[in-house]
Image (cartoon, rainbow, N blue to C red):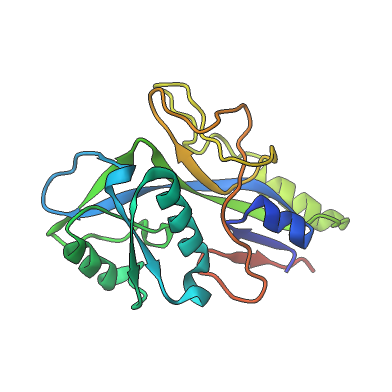
Length: 215
């Protein structure tokens, strides 16, 4: 594997000798029962954590850290219901808005459920392109540059408030768990996007990873 697209923490890059650049970002939303599509505060949502750590370790870390930083509630499950019909069943059972996952961004909701934006802060799942820090092959370095060359703000800049999303770690311009605080709220805003949260899994495949191997 020469290039990978995944959610990754700074400390994991350092531990495994990897380099990364921010490639994409998905703004996550909440799903709830009823017809109201009004925004919901992050502290009022529920995040699901699955007992199957081998399949959902990245998501579980994300959810735990989000709950710790915002006050969102945690609901532990054991049926893989982070996505799909089982997720919808959990939304109905919880009785409050539940955060969706990046794997389910394009899912069609049943008629009894609605999508609601999460605010204060908005929650972003970011993706990074990752390669070996000691990589010297021109074809790999050129591919990394070409793939990330035109990456823009990715919705991490709030045009209304001018506040920038930032995570709480080093100043590498790569991805991670980003909390976007609108209005006057922000997490250590700065001029460069950084990443802190996520996981790289050398032993387990993740539903959020894509790999590229150069000839």
